[in-house]
Length: 493
Ligand SMILES: [Zn+2]
Image (tube, rainbow, N blue to C red):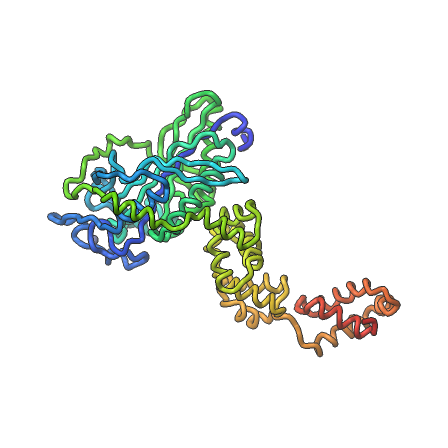
């Protein structure tokens, strides 16, 4: 069954649960640092290792960041709520419970608007709550990095206790075949909103933004189907792929008269498919109860008002401003946003490029490379400053388009800045008129018939000679200079 066949028959309902690691300087319930990539088990203390007798103290910055996220997502902020213990065993969770929130989330009932193909979709937000992250298990000795086939498992508790905000959408029905794109657009918008708040670096590749995607299918007019939850989808592109592949998988089972199991599934980057995880636990399995070691959270309404008043401009309205500055259509701006290129282009312009020049590289050559490699645009290997420098070399006439693409290839392969790559690879435009004149003379001598035509006034024939010169200079000449030189050599200009 193709995707189109499936959507002609079934209606998908999606839902998204997103975890955002906050960028607070210290952990949620202790004073340990939160630097990414530190030596394993160097950012730990009795509290986040759950040694007997240690007690948590809430980090005000974590609560403030959660409220700001809630406000930016148009949520109501609870005037009083508690943390809760979520009990389960996991080797990378030293307390054997996670401090989370259950029936008293800090923020509830908001929404995010996303735009797709000129149409707006409102994604309801069920809740935004605060919890702590777990540590990280490393399975070594095997080929896949998974526990299967590993010879040893190691645990790093540096991440244990880092504040985590979970954002849960309401079910999203009625988006039909666009379900994968809507899911991606939502995560993109959410990422941009949270980044604009400065509360997290929201880097999917480093795990500071992690996404679980719920998908179900039903026949038109019937009740919603059983949903599966695809865990830890690690890029925007994977969000889209995970929804699409899960829709196709479920449809095949339903068409065979089968039943969808309520379970968690794992997204596989290499195949784009999901594989079965565990059957879904229910809330009762976790035996939630209010955390007795922490006082309730009762944010002062005046403080919440203050936080609301100081929210930054929404990414969507900022995009509207930028769209005017850059002079592009709404549709073009939307593709820029969906490609995750807004900030990259903004920074490239700030580094000195024209809006058109900046957009050309990020949405053209670099977007193509990112797509080919299945990676995010920001991870493609060129910085905004490098792209601005490249565009300047083009505008100064030191590179033509073709040579600039070759230089860019060197830049993304880590050979250095554009100017370095240009000189190391010998890619600059030949502007030495002596060398060019020799190539022009050679082309005229090799093509006497064409030269004669040009002398007779058929100037259009010069194109063939320009082509010949470009060939001998391996594309490293400026075509207009060559043409002028040919005409003046033949005495027709
Ligand atoms: Zn600690």
